[in-house]
Amino acid sequence: MATHLIQGRTVAMPVRVRDAEVCSAFYAVRADAARAVIAYSGLDVAEIVPGKAVCVLLFVDYRDGDLDPYHEFGMAFLVRPPGVSGPGGLRDLRRAGVFVHWLPVDQPFTLEAGRTLWGFPKELADIELRLGTPYKRCVLRRDGRLVLDILIKPGVPAPGATVMAPLDAYTHRDGITRRVPWSVRARGARIRPSGALIRLGNHPIAKELSELGLPRRAMFTSTISRAAMSFGEAVEV
Image (cartoon, rainbow, N blue to C red; front, side):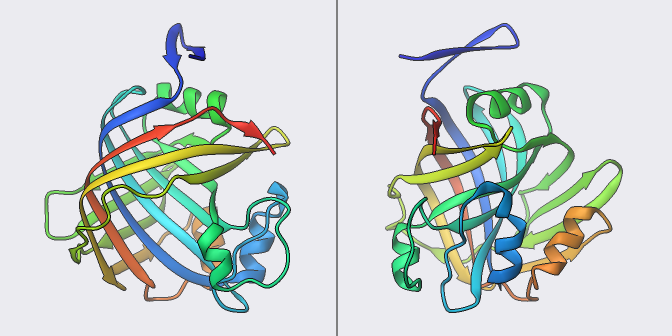
């Protein structure tokens, strides 16, 4: 079993999260704009229909895990596996991975661990989560500036969404693109069409989201009240 030393603590692989609450909104955005945003990674976006890619905005309350409790926000894109070419569409979605473009957190230990172990683009930010109301809310600020304020309304139960297929996450740091094996077990999953309200602030990331052509309505939203996750060893691609 591989181990790593982070801030004087030994972290064993795979890293496990035993309990987390996850809220996600999936948006159809301009593929050309999304492609330009992640060009530095060498990866290509998956197009669900010609000219449209998928941007995922998510926030997570990590309650029990190997990297301690913390809050996280993510901005990610569905991408093709490295080296895949040809027509897109539904074939792209069946084999798509997730490229993590931005991943602010609110605790320094997970910041260093995420950067060191997997190359995740973690930054310290002020992440306010309100999860005990009918709407799940995340208010994200960085450097004292509002990035966004997003509300997600849980939908109908999705009892079949318990063991999700293993999914590859991709990261890029220090000129290296990495693949991170990632698995999720979900309890209390819900899904609904649309279901999100978002207000963008004046931070540069908010401007980047606006330039993607982020629509007023999400394609769909999902919430998971109890999630367990496993993150494997990163591999260069």
